[in-house]
Image (tube, rainbow, N blue to C red; front, side, top):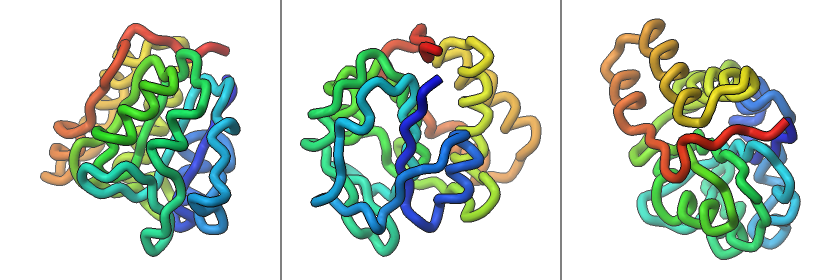
Length: 178
């Protein structure tokens, strides 16, 4: 399965572990250097960047702007599944991925956390999601399996909130092509 990954540099290691591929990072990537067509042909787009409510951007370390929704719309995602491990992924950036041709997007509609070195929070959930996709699950099934697995291991209030605010938009029957 071809995976495209982008992360704020501070989340590079935990994102690498979660997504299974080394992410491009920002910095050094900035909005001026972001190349949306690098996502073309990916079966999975895995993003762990900062987000702000209703903002059409992904941000890197110190909230440097990495990519805009207008840029993401230029990609040719052809049914890819997208997982956004950053805050406030539901909104302009998930819409841009769907407009670029993603079959579905799994993202948070609120704030979350990802872990700097080991996958924590949304990156830990993402790691389970990716494993289920690699096992042949549909996106909806992968999200269900990863939610249950995460919920069985984590019982604090912020964990319950993460599970309650992660959503799938688009076609939950989508599968990641090999």
